[in-house]
Structures are given as C-alpha cells and as structure tokens.
Amino acid sequence: MDPEIRKPITELDMVGDISVVDGAASVTVKLTIVGCPAATTIERDVYSATSAVPGVESTHVNVTVMTREEREALTAKLRGGRAKTLQFGPDSLTRIYAITSGKGGVGKSTVTANLAVALAATGLRVGVVDADVFGFSIPGLLGLAGAKPTQVNDMILPPVAHDVKVISIGMFVDGSTAVSWRGPMLHRTIQQFLTDVYFGDLDILLLDLPPGTGDVAISIGQLLPQAEVLVVTTPQPAAADVAERSGLVARQTGQKVIGVIENMAGLAQPDGSILELFGSGGGIDTAARLSTPEETVPLLVSIPLSVPLRAGGDTGAPIVLTDPDDPAAAAIISVARDLAARGRGLAGRKLGFSVT
Image (tube, helix red, strand yellow):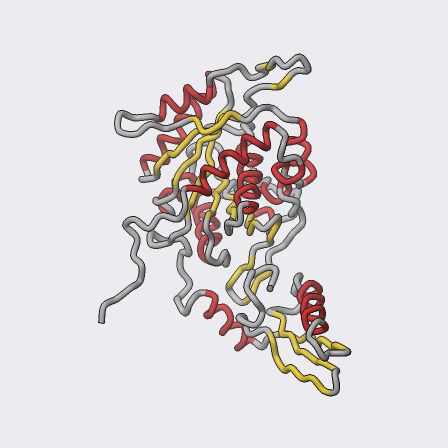
C-alpha cells in the first residue's frame, strides 16, 4: 500500500519490471516524485512481500521515479478521468461535519482531532481539513508538526496520522509564521484544499473551522452547503450567546446544525464531586437556543476537563488512543460512535446509473 495515497502500488502503476532467475528476485518500483517521503516504507514493504514468495532466495528492489507522462496518467487515474474539480460536491457520499464555535479557547480543535482519530479507529476512512488558517493547530494535535504534503503534478497528497488524512496551512509555512490574509485569499485556500488535495473516497470529512462567523465560515457554506454542523461551547451560560451565532450563520448558508458538544464540563475531585470551573448549563442552553419548532438540536455530550486530554494535545498523542478509559476520551468516543452509526446517506443523491 502506498502510505500516502492508501491504494496498492500495483493499482497505481508504480511497479515496473519483475524478474526471478534461479531464486533471485528483482522488482522495480517507480516512486511518484524524487524525494518521496514514503520511499523507505514502500521499498521495505516491497522487499518483505517479495522475499516472502515461495522459491525466492534473494531479493533486490530497484527504486526509480515516474516520468512526467506516468505522473500525469496517475493523477488522471486518481481523479477518475475527471477534470480538476471540487471533490466533495453535492453528489458525494462523504459525510461532512463542520466543527465550529462562537469564540476561541473552547477546545474546538482538540475535539476535532480526537473525534477524527476515534472515527478512524472504527474502520472508517477519515480526513480533516484545518480551515482555521490564522490559528492552525491540527498538525500539532495529531503529531504532524513539521510534516509536509507530497505534490504530484498539481495534486497534493495529504500527510496521514493515526489513519487520518490531514491538510492544514500550517504544513506550508514555518511554525512561527503569522498568516495575515484577507477574504479572497482565505476563500482561495479553502477551495484549493477541497480541489487539489487528494483525499480519495472518504467516509467522513471533518472541517476544523476558525471561531466566529467570518470569511471562512461563509466560504465553507458556499462550497459545502451539504455540510452538517457541530457547535462546540463551554458550560459558561455567557458562552451560549456567542456559540448560538456560529450555528445561525451555518443555517443561513443552508447547512444543518446536528448537535452541540459541551467541552470543559467539570473537573472530577478525589471525593467524587465535580468542580465546575467554568460554570454549568452552557451546552444545554446553546442546544435550546439553536432548536426550532421543526427541529430539535441535541446536546450530544459533555466532555469533562482532563489533564491527559490537554497533555495529549501538547505531544500529538490523541487521548482516545493513549487513554480511552479517561472520562474525556470516553465522551469523545461516544460521539464518534454516534456519528459512525449514521452511515453514508444515499437519499437525494445521484448514483451514476443510466438506462440503455
């Protein structure tokens, strides 16, 4: 398997000449680009697979690079012969969840990162777009700090962490660089993430939106009106006012708010009591404010304050993997299971069949 594209290298036309003479096997592998970051992994896996074939006594793997024509053929194959276009259009079966918040500091990105990993752990194919261009943090939270995407012609292959494909503007700039762009640049960046980045056939795409109701939220609404919205807030009653606005903006662009996640809900004490550092009731209040007579928006979960959750974010080790029994991890995993059970909706989608 190509570790970036997540398809067998035989399907990607990356295997060249093969010969076996008197037990000596020779296999030629064609990497997509010079300096391919997956080169060592691919060479090792090909060597292991070849050596395991009965009758092979020695193995040589000859590593080369695709020609320009071969790369063009590969990108055309991955796109299914279609011209470069938005990957997750109205006919896509991928469920898209936009994780939003009214203000910063509520743990939205931490929730997104752990939710993505928990979903991938159920066997789903998951991708994350870090749409918080100014305050990108997803790469660090998933242990991808310093990771760079691979570019094959005009196609970008996203880095993978914990079986989650990830793209972020943080992968294109130095860690200390401040991104200060106006609306058109922000829109173009999000559009490029959804057009040029090859995610493949995803079951779920998570979008980590910036806090508030600015340009990126509007762009996502225009580009992905079918996205469903999860609003993250804190228990502070005052936070409900701000959180409500992000959900209302999503509705204005045609998106559906499917639930509220309350983060930092309390800190368990040794005697079993809960210390409510940030108050209580904000999640329920936000859900009530976003509900309408036609549609009830539920409070999906209350995630307690957790030192391991914070520490996992600092080290790039999601708590849903390192300590799944932690109360915060268990809460996030419960949301992931609910989302995973929703499946990929077919209602109203074109299936591509024709009658002849």
